[in-house]
Every structure is written in structure tokens, then in C-alpha cells.
Image (cartoon, rainbow, N blue to C red; front, side, top):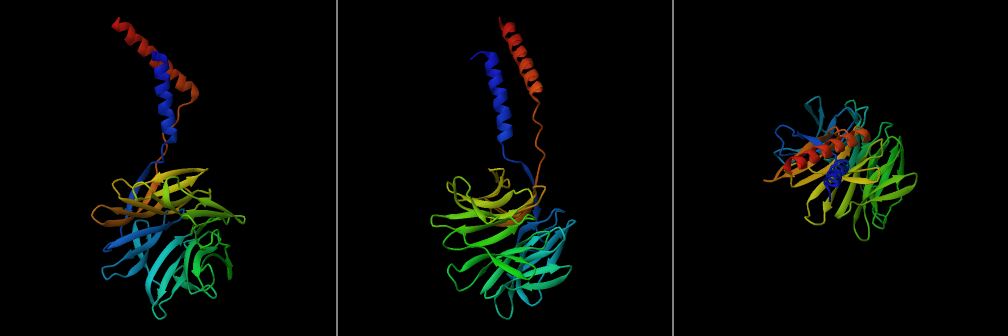
Length: 315
């Protein structure tokens, strides 16, 4: 290959690699002071984060992380409280274990007031996500077959989602357009899904042994995690415009992503060597600019000229 062809090939290959690379992120640890472990699960467009943490006694509490400060969230008379979703109106949803009945219920927290979300005829239910219209999604279990169902709560109305597979499914996230994400157990594996206008689309990361979709933003980007079939570790993913991008915190054994906002910030939970576990916020870094075609060819010409000069100097 002559020097001109070689330089053109190398430059264009570098540009293609840059365009195909995964989105880089900066990771900010989310660690509730004094907690044994912390899980960051939901994030809104203001960057407020909700999740849960385990205390030294083994009990789980919720938290809100806002303006670099942590505020505990505990449903009254609950043994455990686990917030998982927050919208731009600072309404928070999650689940709690009732101290008296030992049954899991969903809850909505709005300006300090707690309201239980109790699905009719359900044995238990978990509220998982909330959009800016106040629509809530979650999953519940009853005595029917399949026993696990996803639901949408709109005001006082509950709508069960038709299961995409024979074993039922749960709903975990909803955007302002009413698109719902979740995961289900199929005949041959565990998959994520997007439910939009009555149609299910399966989310299955290539090369994974299982995939879970957990949140969707207003751009239709889906976030979740998958287990790699080759090394059995867990990684986060973002599914956008038909393409998957893997997310892994540097140095982590496992990275699980649970939430995404409209600017592409992610929240999740990571497992580090030494059994160290904590939550995180991953913020996308700006992509380096891609040169305009004229700039590309000017660069190629300059490099080719340099190569010819070097070659002539050796003669």
C-alpha cells in the first residue's frame, strides 16, 4: 500500500472508531453516611436522586439526594422503605413493608405526605416509576395465572398490562408519552421490553444471558442492565436509536443501571472488589467534535505531504 492510501486508511479508521465508541461518563459515588450499602435507583431532570440504603441493623430506608445533601425517607409504620422513582415535581414512588401485616405496598410521597398505593385483589405490589403527569407504573402479584402483572395507575384507575410472555411481567418505568419499560421471563430467557401504543418490543442485549430494562426518558432512551454470557458479570446499558451502549464503572466487578433522565444522566449500583457496594450518578461527557469533510481532507493532504517529505529526506 502506498503512503497516501495508508494515511487515508488510518485517519478514516480513527474517525470511525471515535464515532462507534461508547458514550464516556464521569461517575459520582452516592453513599449515604453511615450506611452499609447504598442503591441509587431514580433520577429526575434536576439531578435529584432517590434510592435505598441498609443501616448497621440490617434495615432498609429510603433517601433523597439533592444539592449534595441526603434526606431520609421512611413511610410511617414501615419495616422497610424503598423509593425507586422521582419526577420533576419531586413526587416520589416506591414500596414499603407494612410493619403490622408484613405485606409490601406501593407508596407515593408528595411534599412530605405519604399515600399508600394498594392494587385491588393484589397479594403484594411494588410501585416502580412515575412520570410528570403523575402516572405510576409497577408490578403486583395475585392468585391468577400468570401471577405477576405490570400495571399503570392513572389517578384512581389501575390498568393491568397484558403479559408479553407466559410467565407475566413487571413494569418499572414510564415517560411522559406513556411509553412503559419493564422485564419479563420468556420461555428461553429473561428480557426487557418497551410497551408503546399496545405493542411490545423486546430489549435483548447481544451476547447477554439476561437483560432487564428499568427506565425510559422522554427521548425514548432505555436504560437497564444485562449479564454478560461470557464472564457472568453485570453491566449497565443504554438503548438509543436502535443501538446498545454498554456502561461500566471503572474498576467495578458489576455495574447495574436503574434510571435515566432527559440529559442522559444515569443512576445505579456498583459492586467493587472487596465486597464494597455503593450507588452512583453517571454523567455523559461531551463527545469530541467530528471534523468537517473539508477539514478531514486538509488533514489528509497535510499528512500525505509530510509523508512525502520524509520519504524524500531518506533518499
